Amino acid sequence: MSGLGPSLKNSDYLANTMLDRQYGAANTAKYLRGTPLESFRLDRLGFRHNGADYPLLRPRYYNVPHLTTFAVQEILERSGHTTDTYDTTNLWAESAQDPPPTGDYRAALLSTSFIWTERDLRHAVRWITETYPGIPIILGGQYSNLKYASLMRMIPEIDYIVRGDGEEALPALLDILENGGSPEAVPNLVYRHRRELLGYRLSPFHYLDLDAYPSPMPKGKWRVIPYESMRGCPFSCKFCSFPAASPKWRYKSAEKIAGDWRRYAEESGASYISAMDSTFTVPPTRLRELLRLLPDVGIGWEAYSRANVLKTPELIDAIAATHCQFLSIGFESMSESTLRHMNKKVTRKDNLRAFRLLNEGGLGYRCSFMAGYPGETPEDFSETRDFLAEEYAGHFMLSVFSISDETMPLWEDKEALQIEVHDPDDPDYSWSHIGMDVHTARGLNHTTLDLVRRVNDRAVLRLWQADYQHLLMPQLGRWENIAVEKAVERIGMAPRDFPDAAEAVPYIRRQLDALARYKVTVHSDANAFTDRPLFHF
Image (cartoon, rainbow, N blue to C red; front, side, top):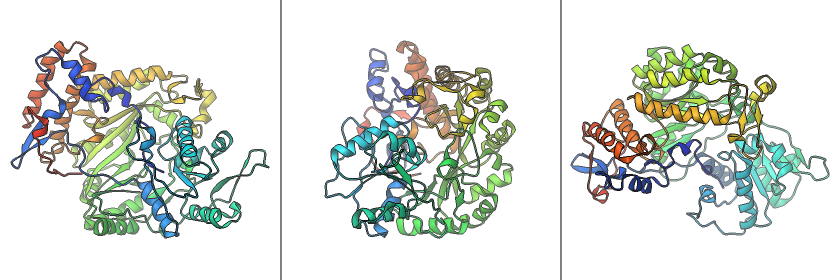
């Protein structure tokens, strides 16, 4: 069982607007009722291309395989174990889209990579025990890797947790469950031992040689394939637990990466790779080799980078020449004080240089920021707010700091920064520190997003676009698409900006005029659009 978690953090900002993921259409109809625009709907925006009328907000025409799912499938099939899979998104919905598989199962494997609260994990474990009573429950993934001690103490239904690399541990554990034997012989395992005071034991830890082990291949044809090129992280940002999850940083060679991507293109028909690593552009020696090898591979890709890697226009051009389409960079803050509290090892100057190089270069990009990191004051955050409102251009994300993980290195500063969690069952929404509390941070987040939407024509929040094809208008350039998304965002968020819909009508019409400059118009019938694919990535 693997898949995405129960919610998208910060998505509550879209609540009660036209861009609300679940109720957007109903919100639109209610908001515009009785105005001259009462028949308007976002799904009626469209454009003509090559003789066909396309909806502007097109659902993705392709699925992306879930990395954990196909990786674990391949591990088990390679070792001779038969599996059925179930998407965990079914667990969070009011009614499951897919019925659970049936069979004579010997174990239930649950990935916790996209679970981030004990409450949600308990929900998933309870579902397993009710649906498949009596079989062992085995956890793996980031959340259980970090919190194995407390989980084994507090959730007795959990029988085993695989820590770290599972490629050797998981098949060995299943062999023991099938044929008998001692779990202490299985590497990277947390297992029940009720005679012990804590109730569990740890087996020896072993690290996989990533270059020697074959990278997983999803079954079938896929346009986009997620990819993992490293485990652990060489950096020690205090808000991140990646180093704790895999203390030894390891990475695949440039030659292996290039070979894997060629294989995905040839065998799976992939035209795009989404590198999932915390930062793909280190170490510099590997990056230089990738710059040499990837142009000939000829496959598009996106990845995460650090701002202080991006130092020259020549490097931006060289990365673009490898068919990179998009970089995501965690700027986190534009305050030197906040960056020092984070131990980010990046300065405001680094962030400014990276932004200006990307803004002038040929790569797509998204920069991420947060509000409320421990020690940050509202005055510190104002430097981030002003940068976003006055200078930033392109896609950005602004999150409220999350304190859900007690393994974060930031707890070293608990006393100095007066970090407190007031409700252990809901830590994301109950923290405070010397600079502010969560309510202040959420207020700063929302007022900043409101401000940037109103005053900055070239900065677009990357939050509502996940369900739609990127780019919205692939026949146009990057900045034309930014302008189109900006107009859609302003229309969609009108219920937040104008509580009185009558006041919003002239504003919405101005945004429709802006869209018309790019040949986007309101069509009378959304059902008249073609369903012919219009691909980008």
